[in-house]
Image (cartoon, rainbow, N blue to C red; front, side, top):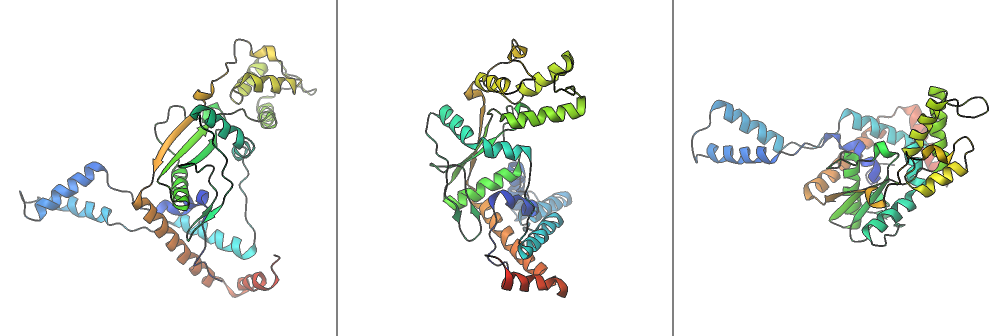
Length: 315
């Protein structure tokens, strides 16, 4: 057993990418080129400080990919998960909404785009990655269902989550596409998850009495605020009120505003970069080598797990 051909999932690649050197800025590239020309004898000789600056910029430009301590710990965890056939699945309310509302988010973006987008159901694998993107019609589209109004990146001008950027890079490599989009969509949170939020609100602020009724005006305002931050259509609000006896539709008069679909979609463009693609694969090569080192360093009593996996594993 070895990890020479271990395939990484696009959503998990970020865990090993911390050691990718940061590229020089446009101004730093300009300074580097100017200093190199002067250093080669064309122009005024460099001062001592300029020589140091040149050396520092060259060192940064030629920096190699390395595994950080955090990446190594993650890879050690992966090795033992493979040996024991066990893994810890992330459980979060944000992921729950994304899974439940994925189709609705794709439909909402289709309406805004005025183009029928279909959920991709194909999983692709190459020498480095294995993944299933959300949509691949002409470009990669990764759809994120925002948890609430507060988490919707309404005013952002760029992708702030590095993990999502690397994820798009992986999908573009798998589908051999050069363009991608990260699409945030604000759709109604399912009633069950909104009720879970109200339960948390009750634990913290005691908004419900023993019979499950709203205690007072202040409690009502907190519940209305919570619902408004998770439901954005009149149809969704009516459904929530119909299915929950402790809340009344009239509470939302003059407070609730239905948000148009075009205001509930935020798209960030991201294009293929040969340098980033090369760095991705360099990091995976380093990760595989380290996982093999971890495997060889396992004490004898733990190596029995390898034998157990190879002889008694359940198909």
